[in-house]
Structures are given as C-alpha cells and as structure tokens.
Length: 388
Image (spheres, rainbow, N blue to C red):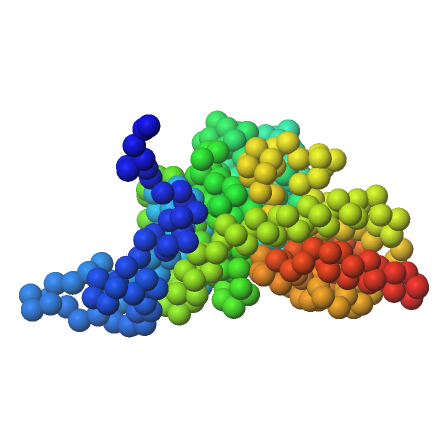
C-alpha cells in the first residue's frame, strides 16, 4: 500500500482551517483581530513587520488575503473595502485615454463607473455582448486595448463567457484580461488557471456569505508593475479592508465550499422545477442543460454552477414586481451569495437606463430547504397573476 503520509490536504480542508491557523501563544484555532492603526518602530527605528500604518494593511487583512490567494491559486491577493473600490482601483490605474473593452450588460455599478470615465474622456470604451467571442474579438484593438473586462456568468442574465478563449483574444492584442466571477467564487471558478491576468470578486457576496460586510478582492497570476500601481491606488485612497471586516470574511470563507455546494443544489432544483413553467417566459441558469453556455459553465466550474439565476415573468412589469412583494421566504433585497435567498426586480434597482428586461427577477438562492423556496415562488407567482 502506498503511504499517504505526505498527502497534501485538499483546498477545502485548508480553507476550513483558515490555512491551518494555530495561535503560537495560546493554541487558539480562531484567528484574532488586530485593530491597530499604527505600529511602533523598534529601538533602531526600523519597521518591525511589513506594517507601519493601517492603509498598507495589517495581519488580519493579510491573513484573509492569503486564504483567497490559496482559493484562487494566485500569487497575491489584495482586499478592498468594497467590490466597487476594488474595481475603481483597476480603472484608476489605467493611463488617460486607455482603450478598454467591456460587456454591454454587466454589474451596473462598474458599468456606470466606466461610462462616467468615458464621458470625461479619461477612457475610451468599446462594447461586446457577454459570451459573444466574435464581438469581443471585433471590439479589441491590436496594440491599443489595454484591458478586457469579462464578467462570467454575466449579471443579471447569466450569459457565460469562455475565459480561456477571451484570454487568448486579449493577450493576442497585448491587453490584460480581468474576470469578474463573483457569481461562481473560486471554490468553483479559478479564472487565473484559465488565463485571466486579474481575478476580481465582490467578496461581499459568496466569499463572506453572511451579508454582514462589504469587501472586494483582486488576485493575480504574476506580480507586475500594474499590480504595484493598483496597490498604490489602494494605499492613497485608503480603501484597504478594515480589520473587523477582514475577520468576518475569514470566518465566512471557512464554510465557503459547503455553502456553494448547497446553494448550487438548491438552484438546480428550483431551475428544473420552473423550466417551462406556464407563468414564466424564461429561466436563466447556466446549470440547466438547455442554457446556451451550459457546456462552458460546466468546464469552468466543475459543475458547481452556484446559486444565481434569473426568471422572466409573463405579464406586465408590475406583475414581476408583485412577485417580489408576495414572496414570504425570499427577501425582497439587493445583493447575492448569502445564506438567505433574495429576490429583486432588477430594472427597479439598476435604474431606467440599464439594459435589462423589465420583467426580469434576479434570484440569489441560499441554503434553505429547496422545497420551501419552490413553494414560496409558486404562491407568489399565483398571487401576482391573480392581481394582474
């Protein structure tokens, strides 16, 4: 029998144990919180550790970053105070007039930031349809494009983009590829392994998983000058993740694998139940074999499709809004990736100018009983149709 003495623990084991943390002084297995904003130098006026002031980070934030780097199989990760601050750091590091390629439909906050900079002539933007590699290639300019932004699965329609193919297109043009895979966290999708240069996640969502912090994270394959620029932007803007939030993030990540597994199982059950439902026009979920991006999604997630889906309700826009009003278990709330299930009318939340179907409801499926969630949607749909 082959000895298993040198067997390397699985990533799920490493994350569950917070990278095998044990406090050297007390033996505690829960990482502490280090709240200090400043650090005394030693008797020679040298810095004792890599930290001298809180804007550079500290032990608690660094521990959370190390866990995410392990999840992503990354060289380094950087945590920010929100997903938007992480995205903005990437945008702000670009030189004036840089050409970027982004999806027409993506997370509305980041889209608005890009469009604001475009209107101010700080950036030049070209668009492509999420998942459409021909449009992506046509929008990318050889020697001119500096950044290609891919969001997969794409929020809120959940189109799937082939990351490896997008990386090839970006790199052939001399551009960097950034992927936003917030909907399928790195226990599921490790975008760097498919060729992405930067992996972005709103850590508020699945990584934290408890809807009690905001955070954003960037991870890279290789340290490069652009990464140092992004770290400098974080330092100057003071957007490093604070200590208590970093501690909550560590706590949340220890159950990440279990939460995503349960959310995926629930989402599959709900998607299968409502596919071809008479009250719905469509169910948008990459875990369904009928979804156009199913094969790519399966390859990029190892079958852990996550808990995000959307439904398009038949009837009027008000009918769709009424479904959110009549849900008794789904919370009518914005965000995703928590243990509780949420429903939102995306057009109301994103604003009238956001290009989304007026009857689309975005569902974040949590870890509750799947039959309870199915029943709740059934009764809400029935009541909304009676109201119409």
